Amino acid sequence: MIAVPIAAKNMQQALVLIDEANKDADVIELRLDYFSALSEADLKRLLGACKRPVICTCRRKEEGGLFNDSENKRISVLKRAMKLGCDYVDVEFETKKELRDEILLHKKLYPAKIILSKHYFGITPEYAELEKVFKKMSKQKHDILKIVTKANSNDDNKIIFSLLKHAKGKGERLISFCMGNIGRDSRILCLPLGSYLTFASLSAGKESAEGQIPIAEMKKIYSGLRVMF
Image (cartoon, rainbow, N blue to C red; front, top):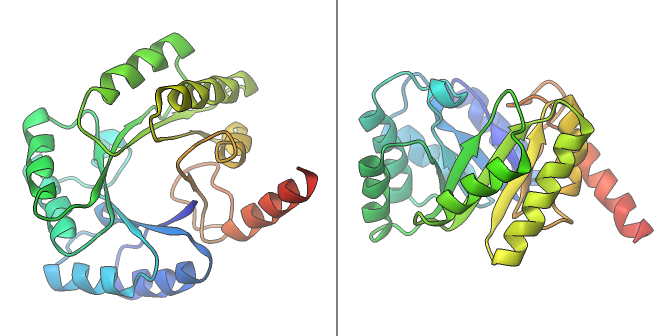
């Protein structure tokens, strides 16, 4: 599956981008941290406009996002999204346990799948370290794990490929690839290597992270790979 992030700061722009994403994306990620304010009615409208499964993400600044209010309010945004029927919520592994527990309790009423995520925005750690992090994360309640790093060499991509192989052997659903221009290949190859999904931009200039490939280009690449194999 290919997920397309919607990183808009106002409703009008978001609705236009969602309409575009509905045509090509398998999954739509709503980056709710980009909104300075978002009422329940607005969130309901955004979710209603999505014709694909929806991931709701509200990323704090420390995790590379834009949300700068309290952690309690950030978790409230995700709980509201669950109540309104989103399919997935992205919850950072570093979120305090008591707040993650609130999401788990909410899941009993509104069963969105939980993506437990960890991001390394500057590096790709050694494989041994990532395997340890993977093990710690897998012990927490989740539906899908997400471990994303920054590639500074082609060897970093290989580390992620090894992690995907490890996750497959453990029967875990994992989203994993490298950010950055050097990580572009990993965004493509992660899917055939077992990643639950990958991310592509809606078009050039609409990236929410460095190294994202426009979805039209990514689909052409996958079409070529199918012909080859």
